[in-house]
Amino acid sequence: MSPAPRLITRSCATICRAATTSSIKTSSRTAYTAQRRWQSSTGSASSPKISTIVDQISQLTLLETADLVATLKSRLNIPDMPMGGFGGGGGAAPVAAAPVEEEEAAPKQEEKTLFNLKLQSFDAAAKPKVIKEIKSLLGLSLVDSKKFVESAPKVMREGAPKEEAQKIVDAMKALGAVVIME
Image (cartoon, rainbow, N blue to C red; front, side):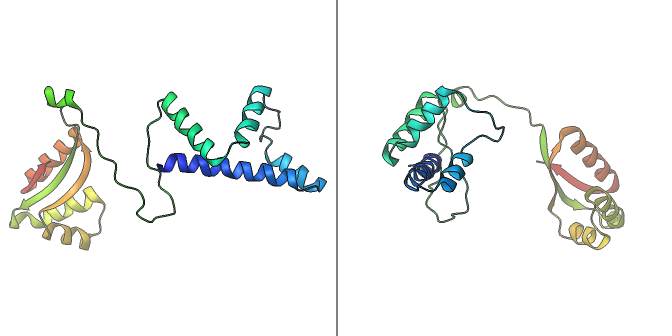
């Protein structure tokens, strides 16, 4: 069972347990608390149709709830999506990408709009100018900018728009640095 139905199943189980617990306890205070808990935050009563559906769902067993979730997902075309949580533990298997034959049959060359800029190299005589430009572009301190330039080749910026990337490449080229757009 994928994580999404588990979450829904857990939620339904909690509702069922709460409904059963509130019917077992006879104290008027706990009955009032349980009744108040399920009222909407707006204070208005829900429609009778919705109330009937909620009552019917709250009486389902866990297996019936899981079947309900599976049926709703198939009827409403909701894909199975892994949900992150605090639980950790490698229980979830990686989801394989669905093969798309149409794209393979007619590959289209899409124009890239976002580029990664990489400082490839620089002229040793222009090193101070390159450090100052890196400092202003990336907002680093002078020491960090110097370390950045000396560790070339290194990615300067990821996901830069084409126009901005071209301006940066031209400015760095004028200073004596080689910046490539990937």
